[in-house]
Image 1 (tube, rainbow, N blue to C red):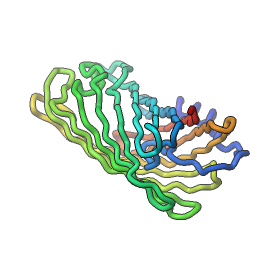
Image 2: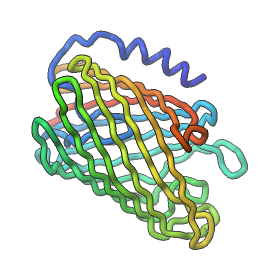
Image 3: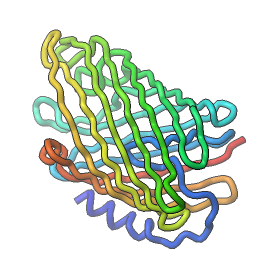
Length: 269
């Protein structure tokens, strides 16, 4: 029901013709990173909402990207909020572990860009309720963006997550390791309206006993559309909408769902 409501609200908005044509849309993918840091003085505020139809679970993230001087150095933070079922089958909602990120623009030219990211995972979630791991963790991600021609772009992500002595709700501990891989293609229908399709793979572990852990994997396919319009001369708003499909082993666990995206990017100094 919620997925259908979101579609009714956003589809007419997304297909509205774009009046202003300036720079092409960049750094506005859904579940993966594009390898472009913010320009000097430009801040980006990103909201993402993912909803699963059958389980009625959802997760929301708020991200703020801040350049340090020029494009070479960028910091950001990510605040996630999740709704899921607890061990007794009751709904619960809470803040998960917050990420503090540093990303370096290794290089950026007309054909290819690379930007490695290193993140601290802060133990802000209530692990006894299933939110977060209860420990300080580390995450690394390497993003690569390739401009194939004036109509197509290709993005790649590869990374890992490490949580030493992570805790579960019973206060049992084990060190957890996970890794991720993602790729997407973007088709520029116009400079401001793009079609995109993302493939995201995640392997993650969870604590199931003292010193014991189990591994789980997810495979997601996310086709979608994004558009952009300018507000004044120095602010760009980018809404996006995607469908979420579980593949292979994830076809049951991750069901189907919807992803809603909204970015506000503005030059503040």
